Image: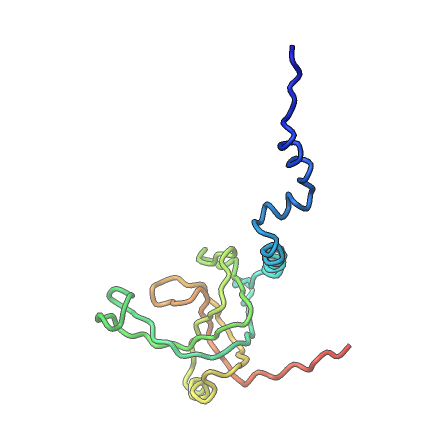
Length: 177
């Protein structure tokens, strides 16, 4: 019986395949390897950053939030799709948070701790709502009560809160250590 001998050309190719060549081969050309590596590392970092606990609605959390104050007109009934096509306009103030949050443990089961979001729908009382116009598009801190998970079509964001006070956000001092 004859021994199987690999052709010389194939043997050279196999010998060139070092670990580095295999790694670079997985990502295509060498110039894309740093981009792929950074993307993978950022993916792990982002997952770790989001792995924190969610606000617990049964314990009236959150009680304070900071973000950019916006004013939005959402489409309401009958179709909740487009104001220009006849849906009733439902104006609302929104707080756009810098970092995503989640909510959990509401009594009715509408909160989904797996859902990350950055926009919170704000309800206001008359004295506070007058301050909103002056702070529009600014970074503000709001003290809130009655946090609720979205239950109906009138809730346009995953979390709805009642604002008891609003103020411009305080700048955080720089840590120079």
